[in-house]
Amino acid sequence: MIFDLPDELSAGEPPEQRGLARDQVRLLVARPGGTEHAHFADLAGFLAPGDLVVVNTSATLAAAVDGTRSDGREVTVHFSTALDDGTWLVEVRPRIDATGPVPDAVAGERIGLAIGVGLTLLAPYRGSDRLWSADVAVEGDVETYLARYGRPITYSYVRDRPPIDAYQTVFARDPGSAEMPSAGRPFTAELVTSLVSAGVGVAPITLHTGVSSLEEGEPPLRERYRVPSSTARLVNLTRASGGRIVAVGTTVTRALETVAHVDGWVAAASGWTDLVLGPRRRARVVDGLITGWHAPGASHLLLLESVAGADLVASAYQEALAEGYLWHEFGDSCLLLPERRRLGVQRAAA
Image 1 (cartoon, rainbow, N blue to C red):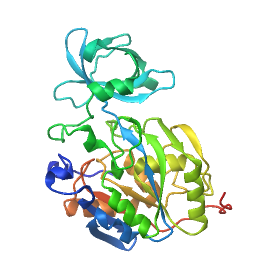
Image 2: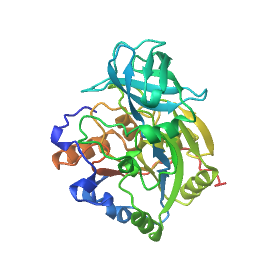
Image 3: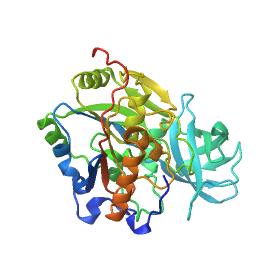
């Protein structure tokens, strides 16, 4: 889906700086019968007792660190993902006015970071001309180093530099995301209480996001995830009893769909996912989706369509543009509630 996004619809600061509580951002509810406009704090009123909301417990890293190339040019390194062998997946950008990666990085290049830490580029990641595997020569672990010397990854539409707390959701427990799982940002403890009081369940998964600055049409990165057995049981019980599975964001959708069998039954698992949802792989278990608003051409739009269908997603985006909803991680929200699907034969919940 391609559309024009006016600059004024990019949220340039957290809603708190606009005088709003987190859960007072706008919420567009899109269903086959039409759309409604509300605030995120009204979420419980659009769900039903017996529904299950699944959230992401990944916490956001201060994943941007300034550095200097061997020829003296200043850059910013975005730490994307910790790989199994102890190396990191990184993106290297010019320090000033960066709209993409440096074009001339080479294998073996060393970049100096704060307090004498050195980062060595090893090889392009899976043939990418943007992402590199890199060795980081640091005492202790990289996450601790980032917490002390890094800052959140930001893009040109964000004014100033919000602190790392602005990039954490109320569910954040497990550090590992390069960028915030932003669909969960409008939740507050009070809102979670209102959901539970209304008979709506809440269950966790973990999926650590990589950098989101993908080129148009570029598929999502492999990401590390965990769906615990308690959540798998709750998902299966909810489906068996007729409730809806409502994913908070594309990260939750990707994790749940990674462990979903063709009949919608899910099993606990952990590891890496390279699942790409879209026309060739429709959602099997997720019945509804809470999401922010994604940029034109983003691969996330195909994921939304895999859950809600292209027509419902298109109508929601048209309405959001017409009504001046705000985009990106500090913007407004959408609840997509398509017609229910049941694929295959429901197994007995385990």
